[in-house]
Image 1 (tube, rainbow, N blue to C red):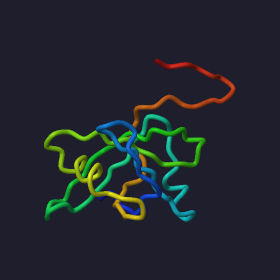
Image 2: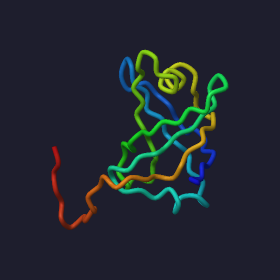
Image 3: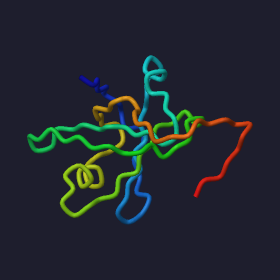
Image 4: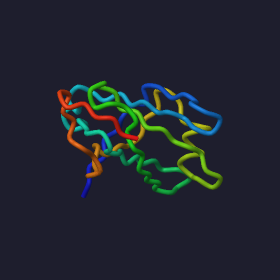
Length: 116
């Protein structure tokens, strides 16, 4: 069974007319558990209108930035995306699983690469 941790929303802002970026505050005692590689994602969980809603979002920051951000685009009937866009605010808490996923390339600062 995967573990979820309550994380505080450090910031949330509208990036475009239909997308918000959510930043999470990861406490020091969880930073090692939340260390990530580029290409990994977070699973977010929230009870919305009595439903246990879980959604995966790719981290959209560098692993070297010490920040945890995801971008959420609203979709017409998207339960979580509409909640995030219209109701979620700075200081709220969400349940978050540590980063996971195998879609990444090892980062080697001395071997820089460009990806398109």
